[in-house]
Image (tube, rainbow, N blue to C red; front, side, top):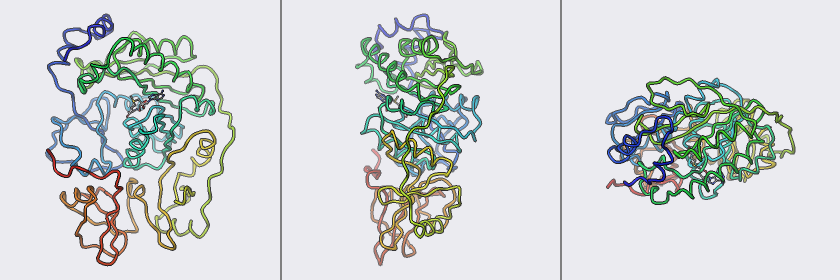
Length: 449
Ligand code: SAM
């Protein structure tokens, strides 16, 4: 790999930068493989995996080699997310600033494919998470990953950052993991090097300014902004943070980190850089800022959610064992669940955003038949009310490939489970066994290699 000389020149003088060590990390060492475990779906992962702790993330694990993840049913069950280790630092920042049960409104503005959204959804159990992705074709991937993660308190939207201007002061925490020139990913994906140039850096920096300017009004006074990139370039990193502090009413928040982690505190307060020659991880930058100037939330319009009939509500509540803390509503003929404390927020958000998914789909009624949804099968927690059928690895992969299975099942709906991790539904009707795994998600390559 030939690193762009203009990049190397632009990094001279940055805290922690060392030209020779930086080049060596790119040409002599391989990218690190890491996963973040789902705290809500504990699983005994493969005994073949040699794992070690990511220092800055309680749920993060390094793997000594890269398995063929697609053929691991636990991945599809949402037991873990394959995530680059440096970006897991977000969890450490959260642990320094927030209680896990904080009932706050969170926006992950640039969310697809969902690495940091799943982290946020796993950390905060009582919060409302709005996971937004502006590029429409990337929304399904984000939705799939959040469904597999199995939490009921997220909303997926497909909006331009400017649309959040209609929600002044709505959010307590905002993550802007901005689109960037991507130099931090050179080692993982050497093709990124070919597209890198100084004009690209400048263009990205302009876009980052615009995105932040558009979305900041939606952060409340005292709210926290996490601004992140996977670029090493100061133009996209410190320069943006400095502008946020000098011109945009933000102040730096101090985060204490142990020296031996190898994370560099930049010259700009409240901001951190990850160099691959100093730690096990790829390039990453993040700054932690608090909003000083006042933006109080002013509630504008809201939209009344479509109600479910009393009779259907009783049926769903009994079948899914729901309590009053869970609210039910209708959307496009399906019944959905959202924790009661977020219903008003959803109504407010629905008035100005394109909501792609809210809460968890429970299912739908066809005549008097209740068709349970895959989203509910993926929801973390105990599953009661339906038979659970354990399967081995071959059956699990055949199920995930949407193949025809032969299993001794009870008539009707059955949940398929691989080592206590739920994979989804099958239905036995007469002698037929129908595989209800979502066809868009099926494993297409059932044989490795
Ligand atoms: N946060 C994600 C994660 O952890 O998995 C990765 C986000 S990626 C670095 C940046 C995202 O910003 C991409 O999904 C991209 O589609 C989106 N994006 C691109 N242009 C954008 C814009 N003008 N405004 C907001 N988001 C944009």
